[in-house]
Amino acid sequence: MEHSGSVNNSSEFGASTAGRSTAMPWTNNKESPNNEDDSNEDDGDTLATPAKVTDPLAPRLANNERVLVVSVTERTRETWGQKAEFLLAVIGFAVDLGNVWRFPYICYQNGGGAFLVPYCLFLIFGGLPLFYMELALGQFHRCGCLSIWKRICPALKGVGYAICLIDIYMGMYYNTIIGWAVYYLFASFTSKLPWTSCDNPWNTDNCMPVTSENFTELATSPAKEFFERNVLESYKGNGLDYMGPVKPTLALCVFGVFVLVYFSLWKGVRSAGKVVWVTALAPYVVLIILLVRGVSLPGADEGIKYYLTPEWHKLKNSKVWIDAASQIFFSLGPGFGTLLALSSYNKFNNNCYRDALITSTINCLTSFLAGFVIFSVLGYMAYVQKTSIDKVGLEGPGLVFIVYPEAIATMSGSVFWSIIFFLMLITLGLDSTFGGLEAMITALCDEYPRAIGRRRELFVLLLLVFIFLCALPTMTYGGVVLVNFLNVYGPGLAILFVVFVEAAGVFWFYGVDRFSSDVEQMLGSKPGLFWRICWTYISPVFLLTIFIFSILGYKEMLGEEYYYPDWSYKVGWAVTCSSVLCIPMYIIYKFCFASKGDCRQRLQESFKPDDSCGSVVPGQQGTSV
Image 1 (tube, rainbow, N blue to C red):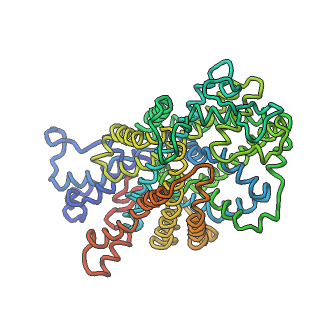
Image 2: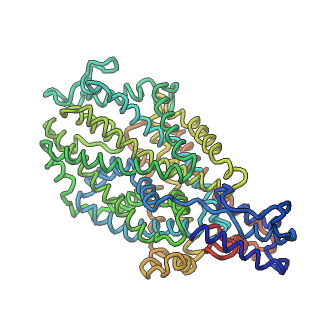
């Protein structure tokens, strides 16, 4: 994998074949567009090129001989500065806001400690094999989610385009949620948190502190009114029927998020590798601080008991198992193209098997740790309000933007706790949005190295400007409804089908045996029987099951908090289909227009790996490592 070794080998090869280069089938590189299209290069002129003919010391070579050297001496692909940068980037992507606001709620709702049984089973047999697959694919083929399909199953290149579209939808709403946290962060820099009392201009007559003895279900807390009437101002709109104008202060916060994202991604792994040291490690420091503070509060022990007490009878309910499967899938995040992109910058012989075990384990343990942080505070709030925990907790954004700030406001040193809590949310979100966008950027830079790869900084700028403009409706008074809507119909449903097709393409068309041989070339040994069985049978069935049940329960995924007009469901399915249809459309295009010969030859050309891509093994012709 040493880059200098690749250069020297290439130069020697070119020199030693000076007298017989015309016999080489790949001599004329200009007639081989596949090398350019499938290039996984950063297009930086970092390697030495053949000496010019005008140099008196340069050997006089024939044209075809000089072209041979160019074809073998490819530019190196950028790699991570340190192994730790890659691990932190993967952990940062996998550990996101869902670990804090979704896992604890799902856990206690589905049997507490008993929920860990299906959760761990689906991790071992479903999530981890897919996680390992993507890391290995990206590292071996060293390209993003578009170019990789030439080497696996050319007809399924539509999977890559579907992933890019899904990543755009994610960028449209996920950065807005981070913008809410930025709004809260700036609001926290005051002597008294603005959601502590009911004497603010945005408060209503129904506002009442949660610590009041007269607090009833008809009353609203200062934290709830701050989120709904000051941050979102949703009362000025009417959901999707009338979303109203863009709120300038919120748009400014989201714009700040996009600026941070740009300067983290514009230089590729050189810039992202430095940023993840902060964005991936900071949440753990804050989680530990909040855990120590949380368990010291009165009532915390009851909250933790509520979180962990197993209710074994709930395991008889199929919903518990479906929730466990969905949670482990969306938590690890295979299929978004991010794991492919991040691992493609690894060295060829990096131990991606060990990386998969380490990062997936850390991700799941983080979810478990976040449960203690959340439920210790929920127990405290139940103690303060003299009520039961199930009447305190909320799922999703309401948990981190209403309930937790509500608890923070009752603590001593509330300003400090608020600042570090929202800093944690921001860093959790930034890592995940880095990963999603990097997947699309890497894919397009690899697929179009001349048009996009050489102009990465400009492309990233234009892409983020485009996504920000598309995201403006989520910053309106009715934007919170659109955020939830996009979360379900953007990636929520489509990604499950996309990953199923991806798994089928790798395991059934490319073949588990061939994939295992690729892993053997990197690691020195083939994956064991357990992994091969999971890849062939269990993982595809795991994905298909989640997809079917998600389709059947899509209205439940939307929740009951917001009203959705009938027309919105049709728009939602159109959004879902916009990405899913990329797959069959590209299959038709590849078979009918991009293949030659009779039906059988077209099928073979469409579904067999493209041999013209060359080898990706260091030291062999066609390598780009």
